[in-house]
Length: 337
Image 1 (cartoon, rainbow, N blue to C red):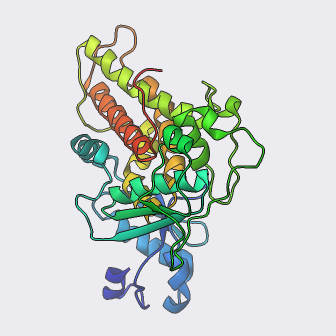
Image 2 (image 1 turned 90 degrees about the vertical axis):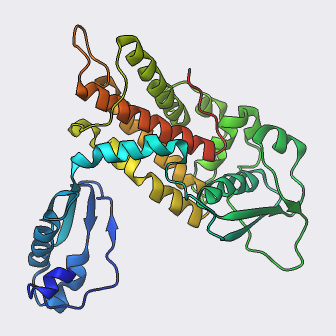
Image 3 (image 1 turned 180 degrees about the vertical axis):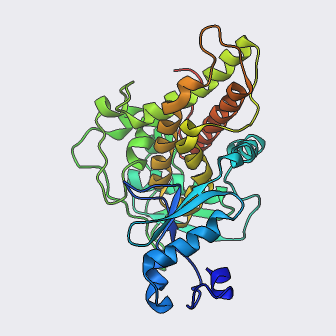
């Protein structure tokens, strides 16, 4: 927009920022912005015309395949798929630290909880995510956690007791009274059951839901997707080829978007102390991978090609993100299911 104003194509004050988001249901492209709608009145032009001007300039930018005006004045942006090798190479280089901040930022965060299992599990996961973003974290609670909470769910606190000065308290909705004990699910499923719902939603701790080895169970889909990435690597080795980042086809579009969003998801989950954002992102990543996993290995008498090596590299990158994300939630990622 600034360049369009400098060139005399638009007459308006350039705002400090532009809101860019993933397109909503029915939208197109990788990202969308309502900037044209925001500035159209000041520019004295129809929003659609402003969106067309911005789209033309965005299309000429490196890393963008094309941009177009949509609806009453939105700009839809599609990224250049040739950036795939760089993204996959970055994930392969950083491993499960992909999306982490390289060094301590000096930020200090205090998380205080009531004496509640879910609050402590959320605080523990928030601590892990905050550490990934370079913050030093101290978790305290009104009382010492129950021994079984520590043994099964792995929660811990740095100190307990009611503070003399009130602290901001992390207060997610506790489990429904009288329901199944989440700890009976085991460490991984218990943590997932308490972390996956949004803080204002009551978690369900039904064993039939969280222990089912079925696609209806989101935790199972994530762990199955990770195990599948590891199996693909083993199977490719049996066929005599290994991964090599390269261009991908359209079937990988959703997966590439999920992998590219991972650092932003971690930063947002840390800033808002919201591990549930990471859980939903891992479900999205797993589903995007599983939708195209069948394309990775050669079929029948087909010989391994550069495309297969590229797809394998992308699959391994997905596995890295899934394993790293589960680790930040305090949940294991088995290679075999």
